[in-house]
Image (cartoon, rainbow, N blue to C red; front, side, top):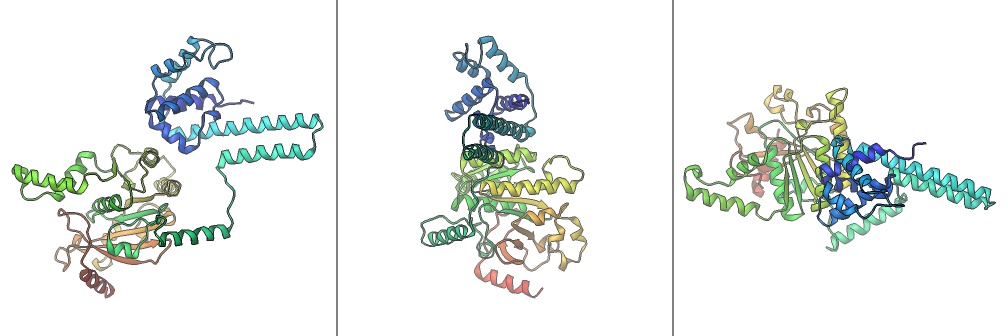
Length: 447
């Protein structure tokens, strides 16, 4: 029996040398130094984790200096050339970053196998020594439990009574102000009154182009960062500069492009909105694996409570037998990730263009308009559709009105519609006055 998967161990450590963020991601997978079989790789991985906690990124020179004293008989390396050769092997290795999870799974599987085999050998030895059967059973059962926990991260299953009691105690504590609620307010009064986004929720934000998806995400990112906690915006569509130009233009005043005083004043207004807000922006991640890694790292480093991806159809997804299968697989992974990280994950997505062939009064989005996969509807805890009548009819009576259609919410009423204020090119999504909300609701009820 091969007791290890040394190639996977080599690939994981090589990726750590290539990209220090891999070390943060490995923690979320549960990989520990003791899971590696090769003593040299085990020592290198342990040192990398210790250095990471001290703010030191792994590199070849650091590893050589750190382990130079760990050579000799009974040590991980017999001599310095053996140490240098192993580190050189890691530096030459060029594994694929996207395969990191697969490498980890293979290492963990071999660790489980080694523990089970060792336990079986101990059980045989106990039997040969005449140990009572109950002790042998305990040995075998203990090994089985350890293997299950390592492979599936299993814990004792709670009873329904315990789940109910925890929910009751949490609700009372929230009501008394003794515990933070899991609901993350979006900062839009009418929407917050009708839709509850809770940590662990996977929320789709669907719309056709020009409806304001990006501005909607920027608006709720600002409000969540102000009132709930850190936020991560993953923009697959725009780079840093494009986002910067957009947020500057929305708070700019006058003809600032040829007026230094107007530009300075506009800069003051822009910074008044964004200075000090705990919002991180990732515009470099383009694949599903990169996005997943960025979310895990942001949760570990910055404690994000929510994140947004703008937008799903632009992500490069793992190849499947069809585009529908690719999107379905990505949707399941993102839903699982939101729950695992205990964050609200907003994912913008395009809708089918066929809806624009319907009569104007019938162009408000519905579930069937979700593009490329019915799996999106199934996975999502919440689905919000953005609609502006002004995008199709410039002569409409309320061009500033943005309708947020609540097509699904797992723990609330749907369908419902919330109303906001949004004027393209002139600011962010904001609250309507209470009177305008009532008038919008009354008008909608007559459609």
